[in-house]
Length: 115
Image 1 (tube, helix red, strand yellow):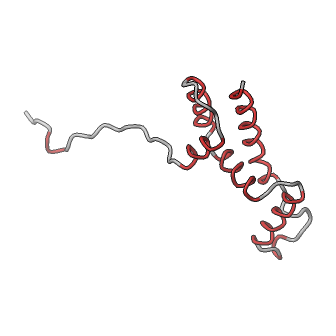
Image 2 (cartoon, rainbow, N blue to C red; image 1 turned 60 degrees about the horizontal axis):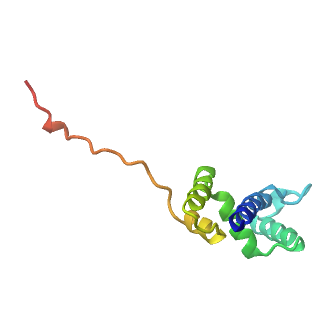
């Protein structure tokens, strides 16, 4: 039961992490007169007004940035192993570089036999 609630919470955090990207800088404002710092400040103010702290926003964005395949694999593997789903587990996974497929070493050109 706990993991079901945790999965719902993780999916909600993932969706919430997409919200800041969808907030317009300032509708109708001249962007050529506004620095990127001003835009960030305005977005932060809008999120703070909604009761979302910078810490929550950062964590949720990290959860949202994790590739969907890795996110789903984390949920499936954690549940299969009967471990607890946690935001910390997703954030740990998000901080790790994705695994790269193993490539086989190529034989050097001069090692080929010639007839």
